[in-house]
Length: 543
DNA sequence: TCGTTTCTCG
Image (cartoon, rainbow, N blue to C red; front, side):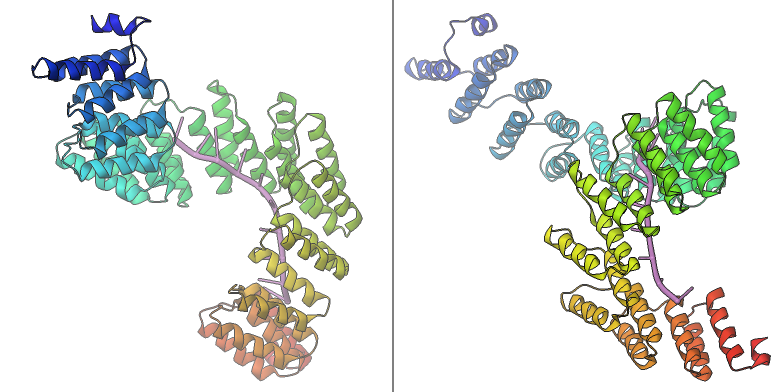
């Protein structure tokens, strides 16, 4: 009767109805039965009259009528189903803070809603709060909490929760195991990933494709491509069919490990299995082939990708980047044109790459024109754009332009990175303004910025070029005091400086200091020393 | 279940 009544158009608001019911019970001196109010609440929820449901709930609390756990759960579930997450959160917090009875299902509904809403932190918080309360949690709560912490990802907490589950005799689902293994892999924690996999297998769940794919990724990220490939062979032998993701992971691993033949084989194998390569796979192949100088292969895949229409901005950027680095700026421009023709919009990275290409050719006019064009399209220059231009202007000897670029960048609120800073300091040194560079560095140090060893190296080298070995040494001492660790380049510069000023003994002393710190001489360091001995006609030592 | 690309010092 209540259901029919509530569904009808003419029924009054729940506030009025509940108040009337409460009044009646008082007036006629019978105990109000909580059933009637819970049924009423349930009816409002079923009718989708959520405002009335909330009013009814509030009035019940005010009148000391306890809502049933089941009714609250139905209410909460209905809100979540209607995607009214904010309202669901309101109800839940209300229930918890007013001390209304609820149970593990209430917690579960709320946690799931948060996860679907992308709020893993909140889901996790509800779990810990419930765990610290009187609520008796169940296996589903633990699984959901594990999913939430794996999103962070925090594999340590996930493993702890898994342990608690097993201690209570609960066996997690395959999905939960896979989730934890994925989190371990993301954090580079192969030891735990394998431990959890063993636990899964010993609890009677066979290895599946998702877990295997995650583990393959973990292996190659840990630098163990062979284990990834072995696992691949094993699961194929065991009858699992690799899918697109499996192939993507493995091809990416092969490319990063420099095994391009194997990457090609896998691609062929994949096509034979009826799976078309995705753009990610093609991009991996292109980068891989470019990396090992098989540029014909790279171009073949690039042209194919363009023809199939799967080439995206990453595909084009890979090509443009490589061509610019090789000094083939004209060809890079024609790839650019092709990209625009195909309707793919250049990104900041595309612009940065081509700007770099022009800079390296000393074509600052073209570089700056491209820079303006980029700003004109509404793209925002990033810190690297500025760094590249600063570097370009310095190399060209256009110091004022370089300084202007730096100021412009700071004015726009873009904070320089280590790289920008190094470029800037190096540029100043290159144009013979080493003291200015040193002042600039000190100014930054005062501001709390810690320069890295490259900046110091540039300054040391600058002083040496000016024939001021004393200042160079002072900078070296200063960097050591600041806690910046010198590297091979630092020592090589100093050795070069001493050799230049005909002080081969000090050069050798520097060499000793370097080896004492555990640094190995590289080919350049040897070259500098040999050159020093040559100048002294010390043929014996030179040999 | 994966999710890419750009940069420096001797």
